[in-house]
Length: 298
Image (cartoon, rainbow, N blue to C red; front, top):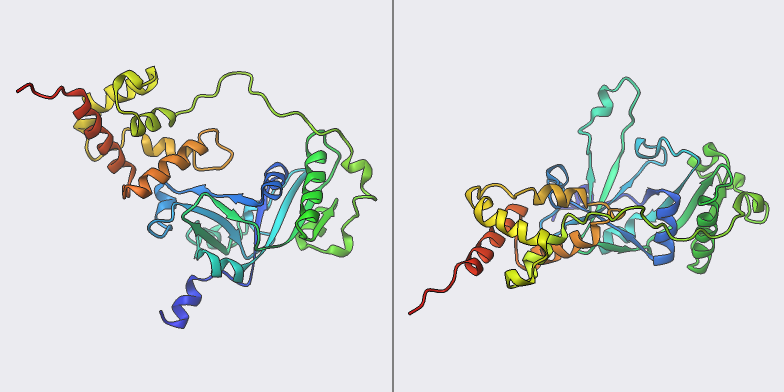
């Protein structure tokens, strides 16, 4: 590979990743970024190298559109781009295809450096600093910010707390406040875990059942309906994926309830060399059509 080709594909020396306060607390306590999936999303799949279904979006700009509106708080991770290039595939991406040039100043260039991975997690070993914005005391965010500051300290990552959005955006550490000085801002008990008021529908679980189970008797009612629809209707449309791509795209973000199931399906697709959701759907049609058809008696 020529030097200019390598440079064109590499992330810059310093990049940034924006996250909400709750997500940042999970990242720092878990020691890893949970990555988004490209499977089923054509606009994302076109950027991903073959065999790399996960990505982390980073930017070379601290003031880009993706984090222009932060509400009462947010977190910016500073990441060593050289570390990323050494450990992952990276590539500059103009997701909006230079739309900022025609936005009359309402959009700015994102300067995105996308990080691709075979796995759904990426270590935070490349993080060099964390900048946290919290404008006001909050029942939920204040305890989460405490978690961020404590977890960062345990990991030896410099963490800076701001109450002023401009100082946070510029990462002007001279205007950062100490946890002691922000005691009232950070006060509040640790909230209990969230319990949904109604059962959450897991759209991908029936697909996972069809992948791993071997008889109709093992299937849940939802998986049995999917099996029936695939064998009797989906088989007529070999160029379509019976909405598997849509469900995978909806589950692409780590905060989706279906995300863990999407990860398992991605893993199965990679190990079995199914490059598209259409290929996987057709394989399930073939599998269950054979199971559905009794073996002819001799």
